[in-house]
Amino acid sequence: MAISNIVCGFMGGCPCTGVLIRTNVNIQTGATHKISQFINAVIVFFIVVLLMNVFTYIPMAVIAAILITSACRLVPKAIIKQLWNVDKFEFWILIITWLVCVFKDGAVGLMLGAFLSFLKQSEKTSETQMKIETDDKVMTVELDGSLDYINGLHFETKVFDQINTDEPTYVCVNLTRVIFVDIDGLFILDNLFKKKGVEVVMVLSTEDENSVLCKSALYQKLKSENNVFNSMSEAHSAVTSREGKEA
Image (tube, rainbow, N blue to C red; front, side, top):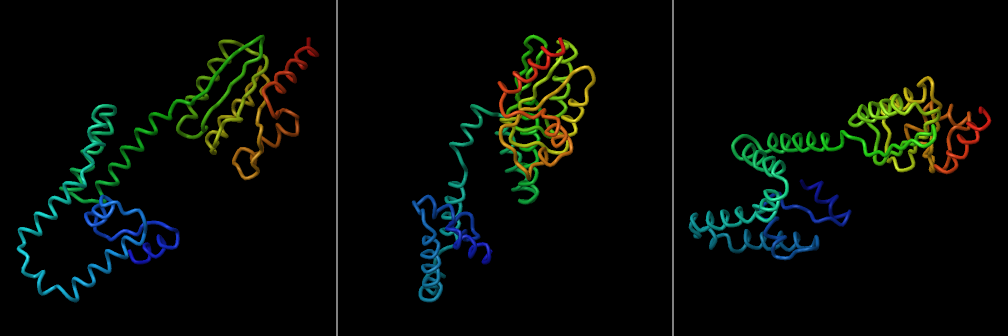
């Protein structure tokens, strides 16, 4: 805790007291600077050194009332109400996490809540955001987001089904707006570019030498064969001219 607070201080963050209630009270009173925790520590120090004899006469019921009131203020009532209105799944994740933290173990509750949230996020991103159009034997596939182990299967199934339906001669895969491609996504792209009966080209405006895609043998092979283009218009012009030559 001490080391983490030192690091927070160097990074300009607000160190925590190690007590959630005290930290929450600090924030609710309008504290916005890391010096607030220093002031809190100084006040506590003087109370312990100079006024402890007086504070020992405070009834435990009074202290309990203060702690209960402060603890109740930790409950994010506005967030709970909003979750109930707009996202009941997230609401129940919150309730389950709270119940496990209170009646079982805090760490177990947080891990369970994080796991359930991850499952929901995975379900939401399982379908790749993409656009497929076919025009005169040229099919364009535009991806937006990432191509990874979560949504790779959906991408592969949808693109291959569309190829079998439209039977294009060329496929232009636009990866300009793709943020990330992992090894599973790369494997799916490799299967697509190796598909027989169709010629596939890639559109990639910015080359990241450290990315999985640009370091792959597939990308290097496509680049050496001049099948990597900077824009969709450039790719369309190239495949159109190739189709004209073949005709």
